[in-house]
Image (cartoon, rainbow, N blue to C red; front, top):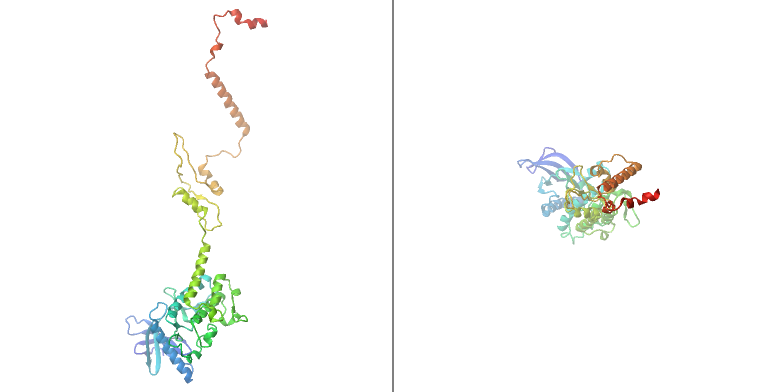
Length: 407
């Protein structure tokens, strides 16, 4: 088959995979200037049973019709051609350069919650689109999800098992044919009655597999057929609740649409973001009070538990005066500092200290000396009282009366 040209246009380069109803090859379009790569599917059922051959031919045509009717979507491969040659059917579609989720699950450890959420968001948007077209994929599994290398987006491939709800609503004969993959196929799909909730079930199983690294068929069930998995993974209870509802045994107990599932996931994410954000703390209040003061930058806390407020000061910061200067005196009003910041800024703001211990006796002596000197200067500068000047008109005998009495 290699090097063979199909449809006078598509040259087969290599074999990719063998499915239940066909073989897939990598080819190139020889009629395009760049000879773009493409995927060629050849209908080649693994059985010659007439009934199964009829089913295989119908599914093959269904994939071509589904891709054509879905129109263009950036995460769905584009249908390039569909034709019959030498009594064989071929389908040609856009080649997606990437790695399947199956390969990632086999080569990587347990996925983080963030990576699983990104997978869910990507896939739910695709399901939202195809379900709006009244189409059910019916074979959502890791091998049919490709992570595109160029943008890391998930691309949903293999639409050979899709079911058009409108066209087959009243065709009960076709509902008896179960199509899908064990482990990812819910009970109602196994009975031949799939619904949009069947695709949601499969996506939930893939997410659980990524979180636990356990194959779907190895997961235990309780007496009601519900999967018991949450104890096997370290997962947020909110996310676990969503995945559990996506994979409920009864399809009526699951989310009924991709839009509903996506809304529940977004609500969970919004609640998580709200809890992670701290309310306006006193740090922000201080920042508002500074009114754009460049001299102090408020250190805003990362979480609500941080209660201390400390303005961050640089060593060369010149703090502005908040009080009008009076004559030659200068006053500086500092922002309130935390104890830790006081220790850091004391060397820059406080005058130098010669020692930690003060000699109290020497200080007392100095104070007394200053006081005595002040009194002496006060006496020297005070004029003599006029009452103490001797009266020259008074007889000297009277002036010395006291002296005589002592004699």
